[in-house]
Length: 402
Image: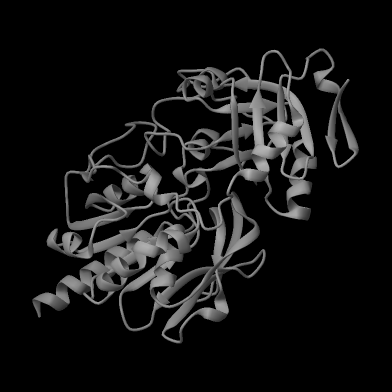
């Protein structure tokens, strides 16, 4: 029977009786969890977090916002739909590692092209299965998201002290600018694919009513697909593109994307760019990291959270409409509410911890949300936010003509 040690507490895993431990997770305090390695054979260090979603593991793993992180999936059965070529949220995968409770299921889905284990190997992602993921989740909830090192060796030999030191020496996400690493290296125009439909898969948008420039801090493809659904032409630019270059593209609206890392670190160059764009009276819409950087540009402050929000079942109250939206979230930093200037209105708040989930500028068409209205994976309660952005662009265009 396999033993898992966490601060001198041993947790036994019956399902791994006959499996030699070939995988290990070692945390910065020396705690470790042993299991069965899968995916890419190697060692990676990152922040250990947990995600409570029960669907969409491929979209989660390929989300650039998980750069620098090791994901502990709380849902026990992962891999049952395999992997395909349609559900990638980015062309390159930035996740450091994955942790599952049970052995990877054999795929049983008409869209499956590759077994999850083989897909992880191909993309060089280290994984462990057979851990008590509930215990690890409780550990994170009690002590906060720790730095950790995940390792897979077929020989099953691990140097705990060496792996602990790797975890300790890693810088962590605080003060780390990851947007500059995951952003596009070359500006490009989105091909126009819409969101996936069972009958037609990805159709192309042929009507381009509005021109949106998206600043890429780690943008998800499904955001771009939703813009196509709403008949927008989208030009994606790198996160350090100057305001002058963005304005030369004559956008009807500007989008600030999601992304990984500390918003304050990214803000060292992003804040001045956004300040100049706000002055131009162009509609602006931000999501996740874009929401946080917008707040910084408006004079607010951000801080690192103990746990963060990661899952597809997070209740958020819309303070304008007085209703509740179930949202998909992935963030480890938040806006400090008390730091918000008086010209900013809080539009949404988390019903878990009252975290600021949405803001808008009172005198300009500028707004943002912390969560993911493009909801991939997750509910679609908040898709209306894309329409609000469209409405702002319509009003602004009408104002220019008058």
